[in-house]
Image (cartoon, rainbow, N blue to C red; front, side, top):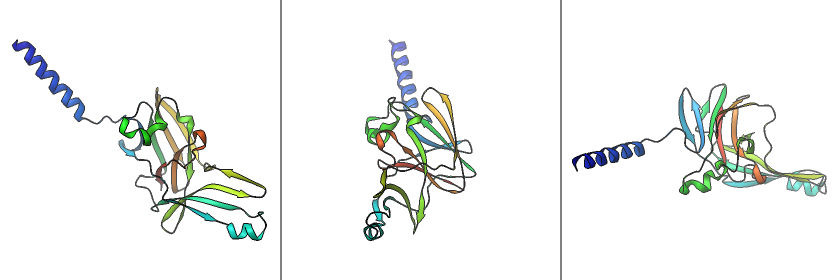
Length: 191
């Protein structure tokens, strides 16, 4: 009887200890900076700013009208020097985080993400979400074309993304089903 109680007590202690440690590889986006990991939380737009409406009206729709997604703050809490290293973990997110991390379920992969550059003005960051004129329109945030993005699979469901480019404000965005920044982004800075 003493052995059973002692074994049960040891198991309870082991389980309690295991639950008190937060694993580094949990579902979502992590910044890898100098060997340490910090979670990058999804940020959502604070509003939408329209521009070009008057010019479009004056030119009978030839000039473009744009809608820009507005994000607060002029810089990210996740700065990198030279290049950014992000680690993405795919799996089953905790139920309470499902609305913020659904894009990391096994139904999606690193191919459903892209990197965009913010335009910084007056203490806020903007992504152009809609551009329209009489000659055509585009919906969704465009990716930054002048970046070098290297993707390496660490193991099944875990990817390292190295983003190299000129200094500026950037974000990782989910692009499946036309989401392209409208459902929130994971921001970072390259200095």
